[in-house]
Length: 356
Image (cartoon, rainbow, N blue to C red; front, side, top):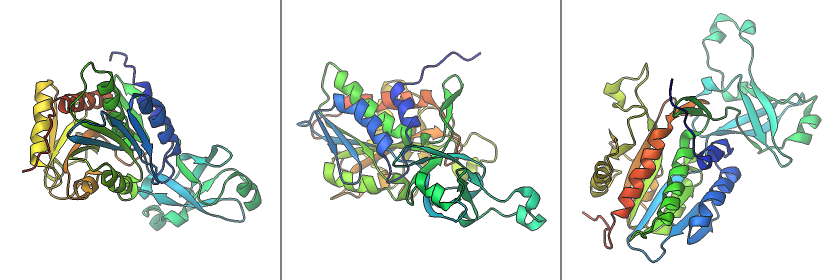
C-alpha cells in the first residue's frame, strides 16, 4: 500500500480555483493570499498578472513565471428553450466536451450544468463516427426557457469542468487543471521559501503568476516587459510519454515520477540550461530532458523575446493526458521542481546575466 501523502494547501486551493483565460479572479485570490505576505513588493496589472518581488535591490533580476489560467468555455448564446451555447477558451479536444458536468461562474455565484449532445441512439452509423462541432453541443442548466436561463447566467460567463483534485495513489493525483496551477504554485512557493531562508539571495527574485497563457502567452508578454529581467525561468507542464499510444520516437521519453523536465533548444539560453542541471545535481534531484526545436508552447516563448532579450529557461512538470478533464501529475515532481529552483536561485551571483 502506498504511503499517505498530504498535498500542500496552497496547491490544493489553486487546483480548486476556476480560472479560464481572462477570468482568473479565483486563482489570483489564492496567489494573493499565499504569496503576498512573503513579498517585499506585490503588484497587480491591467492584464491580471500577479508580480511578487523579493529583495528588490538584488542583482541579477530573476523572473519565475507560471500561468494562473486554464482551459474553459464561454457562453455565447441562449436559445428559446434555455439551452446555453458556448465557444472554447484554449485548446480543447472536442471529443472530451460532451457529457461533462460543468460549473459556470456568474455574477450571482456558481451555476451547475451539463454539456449535452444528441444521444447515440438517435444517430445513424455515419453520425456515430463524427466528433460534434462546437455549435452542435450545448450546456443544460435545467432552465424552463430563455428568460429563466438568463436570470441565472449571462452572455460571456465562463465555465469549467466539474472535475476536482483527487489523490489516486500516494503522491499521484488527478485534476482538471494541473495545467498550469502547478507552475503558478511552484513560482509562488519558491519565493515563499526564499523569503523564509536565513540568508537572502543575491538576486532580485520576481515570481509572476501570469494571465492568459492558454490563448497566446499574453500575460507573460506584458509582465516580462514590465519586470525587465536578466534571467527568467518559465514553469509549466510537459507531456509524460510513459503511457500507451505515445511513440517515444516522435515525442521523446519522459515519465511521471522521473523529476522535473529541463528543456533544451532555441528557446532556451544554453548557459541557463547548464546552471539548472548543475543545481539539480548539487541538490541530488532527479531530472529529465526534452528537446524542442522551436519556440515552445509556453510563456518562455514570450519572455525570451522581451525588450532586448532575456536569458530564458523552461522547466516542465511531467503530466499525462494534457488538456483533458482528468490530467495526472506526481506531486513529488512538483516538490522536486520547487527544490531545484530554490537551489538554482541561491547559487546566482551579482552580474550573472548569462550572456553568451
